[in-house]
Length: 147
Image (cartoon, rainbow, N blue to C red; front, side, top):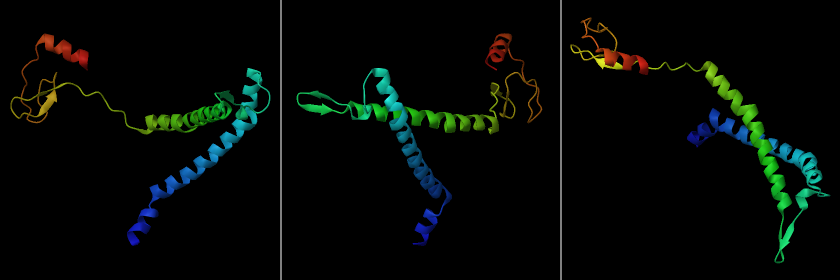
């Protein structure tokens, strides 16, 4: 029982639970906004009168409630857009600002004496200080193009 209690009280489980509850509440707000404002606007734009969410069409005696689908699609697009612009985009910008930038690694070659990696254009090994053989001119221009 003690292990279960520590699992439940761990920070990420509580954060996840709070996120789900807030997400459900936000979904209810978005669905209410869509039902109250956007669905009637869609009805006005398409020339349909009344509540679009209750509209259906019939084929072979079977009713297809396309209005409910239109309502759900608009709700989904609004929810996805709000999450992207209000959560994902700011978090990505924050990560870019705070995360250390990874420098492009210069091409390396092995030192013939100590076998430690050294930059390809280096003239001397940083580990054993031996002079390194010169890099041929063709390899030098290729290395500079890559780096």
